[in-house]
Amino acid sequence: MLKVSRRNLLLGGAAIVGVSTLMSKPGDKSGPRDPYFLDVQSALTAAGIATPTLVIDRARLNANIDTLVGHLPDRMGYRIVAKSLPSLSLIEHIRQRANTDRLMTFNQPMLTALSEAMPEASQLLGKPLPVQAARNYFAALTEQSAPAADRVQWLIDSGSRLKQYADLAAAEDRTLDINIELDVGLHRGGFEPGAELQATLQAIHDNDRLKLSGFMGYEPHIPALPTTLGWRDKALNGAWKKYRAALDQAAEVFGADALQDLTRNAAGSPTYRYYEDTEIANEISAGSCLVKPTHFDSELLEPHLPASFIATPVIKSLPTTRMPGLEFADSAKRAWDPNYNKTVFIYGGHWLADPVDPPGLSYNSTFGRSSNQEMLNGGPDLEIAADEFVFFRPHQSEAVFLQFGDIAVYEGGAIVDTWPVFEASA
Ligand SMILES: Cc1ncc(COP(=O)(O)O)c(C=O)c1O
Image 1 (cartoon, rainbow, N blue to C red):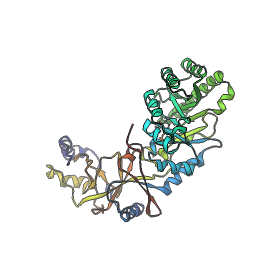
Image 2: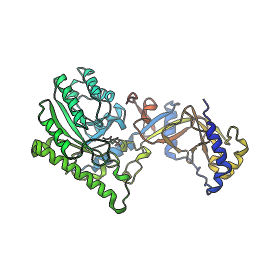
Image 3: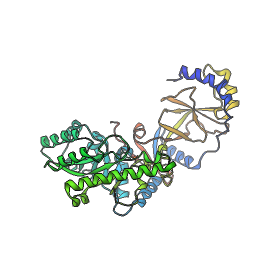
Image 4: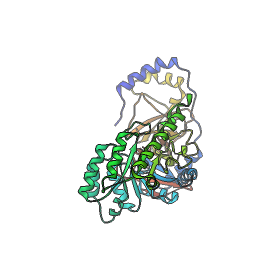
């Protein structure tokens, strides 16, 4: 269905004749195609692919895994963030190459699927699950997945949730591993050091069916803070101070020796490179940096390569851009901004993603977005024919990867494998 928003058209019309005169004239961004994407395009064509497809470049993925593992200090563990890499085959590939058995899981269907496929892996919940979801997890266990249930660390963010999980442990007649969510500055909930944490640690200590397995303190807000006046360093030191204080409280309740066995989880892609020793954390979790969507284009992640792309066929390639009902303004718009000279309509669209090849393509906010045939515009040097592919970089991986069916794995100039993704669920 053509999705031309009336409001967009009207606002766009005004923009063409009015507002644009206040801005400086844009330069032509179109140009020759990147040979890298032409190679991926040849591989997709040779593989007979003709629908919007999520492509992972396995050589780049491997380079990113090696970069991450190479950064880890001695004795620092690596936990794979499953939600950001939502495919069993992708996770299995990373497990093998990074040599890790640790996963961070975020919802019950994924917990169940990973328990079934990788019963030997350790899973730490990355967000606290409603106790009913945990109950459903136990109810869904099979002979195959049962051993995995003993390797799950349940994340607890409050005294009341701990009480619910204590009741679940009694009802299930099993011991539950409890990991405590710390608020180290993100303020997304969890415990700060203090009386409530003390009471919770004591409650775990006093309950035979609960076992303290560790802490999780996530701090992705830090790289976004300005360096002015040392704000970023202060936030990082503040996070670590809180983490250390929580560990000291645990040592008081359980004894210092007990700390040796605890999971001390921290970080995510944006921050894992801050961890250069194991004084606070003894494992970091990360996922997105291995495929590097655009939200992870940061200074700290400079050594990581974009390794995931959406490729979609061009349905129509048109030599001029014509706006429905606003044809009178087309030539003025073209003269003002050469990047609107030409038009392609692609197969699908409206993804959380930015076009990257051919160069200079952009969405048309006047025409509006479409999930069916999205309009993209480009400059005079745009050269792309129907059935050739446009490439996008996703903004994030966790939801976007689930929209295309099997992932096409690209390596050495060919599509060498396909990796099924998880079912979309929250
Ligand atoms: C608790 C926790 N740890 C780590 C991560 C890092 O994931 P990624 O590396 O994909 O950003 C997340 C992401 O949401 C998270 O919620």
